[in-house]
Amino acid sequence: MLRPLPAVAAALPRLRVLDLCCGAGGVSVGFHRAGFDVTGVDINPQPNYPTGPGFRFVQADALDYVADHGHTFDLVHGSWPCQRFSRATAWRGNRDNHPDLITPGRALMQATGRPWVIENVPGAPLRPDYLLCGTAFGLNIQRHRVFETSWGGGGDLLSPCWHHRQVLPFEHKGERAYADAMGCTWMTNLEARQAVPPAYSHWIATQYLTHHHSAGPGQAAA
Ligand SMILES: C[S@@+](CC[C@H](N)C(=O)[O-])C[C@H]1O[C@@H](n2cnc3c(N)ncnc32)[C@H](O)[C@@H]1O
View 1: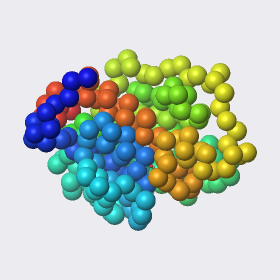
View 2 (view 1 turned 180 degrees about the vertical axis):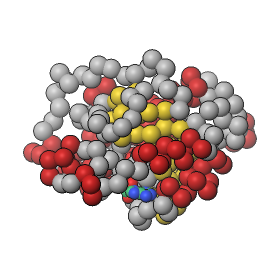
View 3 (view 1 turned 30 degrees about the horizontal axis):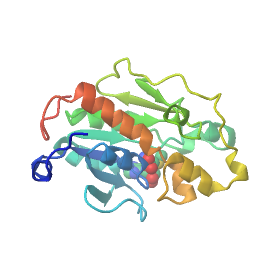
View 4 (view 1 turned 90 degrees about the vertical axis):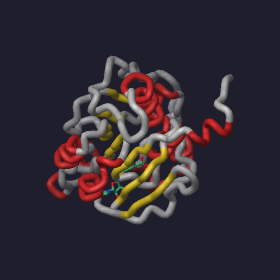
């Protein structure tokens, strides 16, 4: 495989992605693997958010942060809380207790003028530009997530799911098995329950870089 010379690679500017509502960093790790420097923002402390070159965590309200700083990034991702739209809330909770942050979040992301991605559960008010499932990546999980993008997808929707493949019954194997199957090995069980597998955001990042990115860092095409 051809690799850039180290001196050249070091000199190449890296694209910067803003990961809003980052949790313990499932989405962040996928973008990082695709070559982005990642700034994760969450309203709660995230002691297990990845550290090291290319990762930065900011504790803040994501709506405020994207309004103030979103325009300084090459790409903006938002995993706005899903509780209002999840089936679990419909069964066991009250949707009115969970505000819709997708609608104001989308407006603020659009106002940055940067390309953006919103991820959420099926049933959330998103245009399904991409629908991803762990089984399509060879992961042993059935976990559907919808992605709406500023570029509107592009016919690369990953389907169908491969649910005919054996998927382990995790209740018999413990939560650790679930986190590991998600590819979120650095998280606690609770964090992994809320997370997006890095394989999903890596695939979205690759779609963006391959088909929709046409400018250098700081000049990303919307
Ligand atoms: C579904 S989880 C995100 C999972 C994460 N994207 C991942 O892949 O690991 C939603 C996160 O939104 C955070 N959150 C909720 N309201 C927020 C707000 N107003 N600003 C920033 N973060 C918020 C929660 O603390 C939670 O960590």
